[in-house]
Image (cartoon, rainbow, N blue to C red; front, top):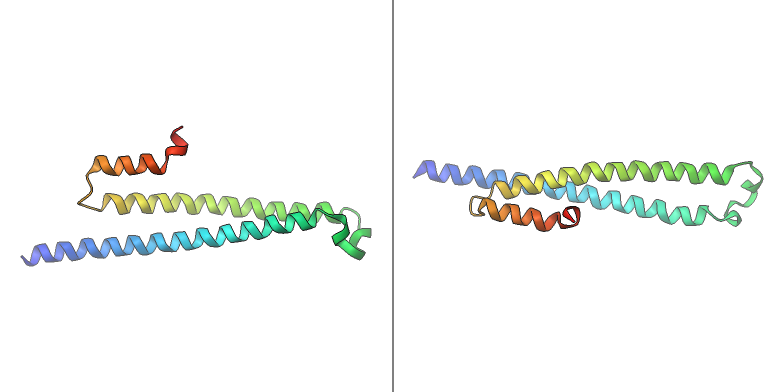
Length: 119
């Protein structure tokens, strides 16, 4: 009986750890999305010459500033890709560790999650 209780406690602990990991990954993804949104908003403002004031006289200032923001946006998108792959791995581990979900149902859940990629 004690062995069964320990096994259940161990599985519960592992599920909690995976759920915490998933929450951390989702928090990071929301933060990265927020950063990308801020950069995209800035790009709209930076694209207009009237917003440079006295800096308008500096040759290539607009192109340099917009270029820097595009580089930042690209780095954010790369980070989001890494976070998403971690998120999918955490989801997979969480589903696999659930003894009450049959393996074919786990596959059907992934089919729903990745429906866009399958088409």
